[in-house]
Image: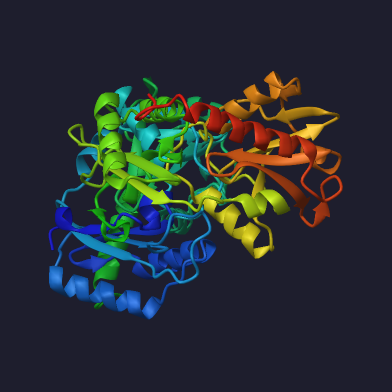
Length: 279
Length: 279
């Protein structure tokens, strides 16, 4: 049914408490990219929140949706809540989780214009909670930062935590090229174990690039050769300006271009192997 | 209509991002207690989130609901979201906020049993975001702490921030009696400006108690004379055990009893003056 017509119970805990987890999966030519990794993470998020899920049932629902929707290039969204019940912080023991799934077509060149031009970002205070490794819908801090970026004329925000280290974009992993090394913050309870992050780091290592997962100080932004964001829909996109100041020569750099090309090549290579849901 | 039948759009940003603010108001004998203070705070929360609201329209809706529902002792819940629209972190500019209001009857002796026995609490890490002064529905950290408390056999959690200071209960203000002084954490961006907190501190000062709003170290819990929680539905309730260890002599103390009596007396005194919505 049309997404705008879908309703959910007002007493669903996602609506009242943000008590739900979600995933976004990219489909290329109708094939979900790294679906198993996304579902692994989804199971982990739900496990951390103590929301049950049956993987097989979920996979069957996803398969039915994709058979019905016949998407080409698209994004797939899945959200699972703890269920609807009386509004109490401690949930009633008998809640039945609700699940919302949708696919939305993407233009075949989705994001390409920004990948060519590069992004302007602004640094924002990271106001989010201390479990951003869990992909929950408690996303108000992300939204406020994204809104602040737009008001400042930037495309996106990069978050700086209370200790002065970079954490993430509002919905992407942040990476820097520093003295020739691709550097990104390590996976902690504040960093989403991004599927694209793992793929990109693997591709970079396989291509012979030096890679380091370590703390990135805010000041490193001013001396890095390149800055990039990566994520499911972002893929690999260069950052060319931070708060109005050029990164490198102010144009997308060679590492960003190379990693994006490697990512698209990996997608193309797997397209020949994957059948059905690819799980 | 029955609350369990109420539906909201799945694309409402409260459901997808926790992008909404709310209030809970206590009604005594059909009269909303401190409604103006709650609506002031609601306006402030919505303002911080840049969600618009027309106070007059909201008051008219509340008045119509109360005329219709004819509640006696009850809780009134109101939530206002940024609206429903395509799922993007930066909201579309033309969203229309959605509002959900309900009243639920409370037993006349709501909370009295726990006020007589006192509460058992557990100390939990405060995982919440850095803007808990905004009463948003990003409440997953609160819910997880409340769930952990229940699992540990406690009634409620008291949150300890990363610096080792007490912040709040999962839906109440925390106060200690330390060397005869009623102490509670000061209002910062991590502390909700609780309506009941303000009333209770005023009542305490008027009654001649020494009151201090200052940082409360975790270690202070072990040497305090009394510990209490206060909030809209909690009113004033003593804490008698923290992680299995008795507070004071393990029974509700005199300051808690006195403040609860003063609060109920204030409610009774105002009941004679308040008419209609009392705004």
